[in-house]
Image (cartoon, rainbow over all chains, first blue to last red; front, side):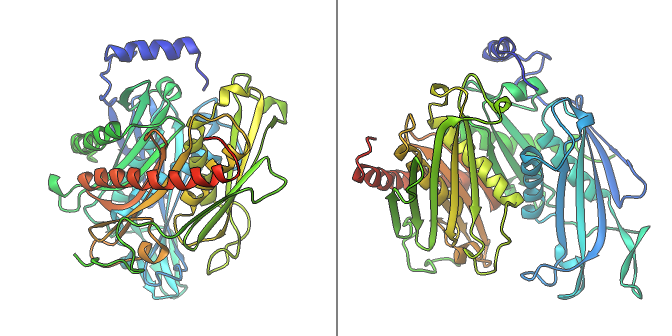
Length: 270
Length: 233
């Protein structure tokens, strides 16, 4: 969505006074909602809403070959589709760079946090392992798709059930599930993206604020032990053309740790 | 602490041997080569030139297009030719890293194409590519505010290292390896930052400081190579 220079200027004027069009403070998130069960045929699926932004994510498992450099580990493939139904700015066709970058940010957070214990997804070393497919779709893009997609992916993994396995045919019995969950650790990553407009920093932008921003930094954090001092940063991505000063980034790193703590409660699956 | 000495004997804050050369593709408006040890990247700039099809034109500024890719035989196991999701993402972050220093508003309705090819890869290819591209842009006479310099900082176990190699990237003992490619403008603003791995908040701040210092040295090498062919910095 292209916004007018007038709107851009107005957003900056508001931010100069620490205000936003919707009444939030720069570091406030909109209301976060997580619903489970988008499709009963998925191993796990969720709908995540952050304000008017809505994404759905689903997890499917299948038998696949392991990568040659990790013969006894399952695999992960993350995709994002920015559906044309979710905003006039998206068009049908193969994924464009926006979707590719988004999928790679989500993938890195999950992979590097160690959320999935891939060693437990091995069926036969060097031959057969479980492949985990996390697919994310935008349903309504009202800004902050990055944080919403990361949250949806992690939530879907957390509620996913292992499929039944047909040992004779060496195949997954598609659509039949066990009561067993996926082998996950406590290190569930939370991603917070900071947007820079002029020299102001904000989180959870609306579509207009997203468009008005010059730069962004996404930070994925996790804590294996549950203790605040054990928080680790697992993935970072600076996006868009705007640059950041050293002090700005240091502030963002500290804020990311704070925000991740704060969000933890809001994103518990009920 | 398990990583007390670097695998290739370098000091922790030492880059691999750097080579920077301007003018490696005759046909291009500007070109350069940048090498970190075994990692070699070349970049060629074409433009500013008229952008076709016309509907892609921006009447307010020049469109910058970066295209990063690796030769199929630049790595030990052959890489299938053609773009991948990885190369498309790197092309995009390269574009974002270079955009802020180019006076794009001086060339409305045009395009600058920056083509980066990795000839030989031993980690930090995107950083070598960005360094080569910044020099190629200056060599092409594109109006720029300043240069961009890039380096990858690694956290190997608990140690910060400058310009990590493939061997270090694959280090698994202790806390393993975390790769943090960084890019700085000459004036010290961060224009590239990516990370995957595991790192504490305070360590990340130290990494940024280390990267800034290393990029100052890289800048001097880029500048020298450009001055050698008579470019004004």
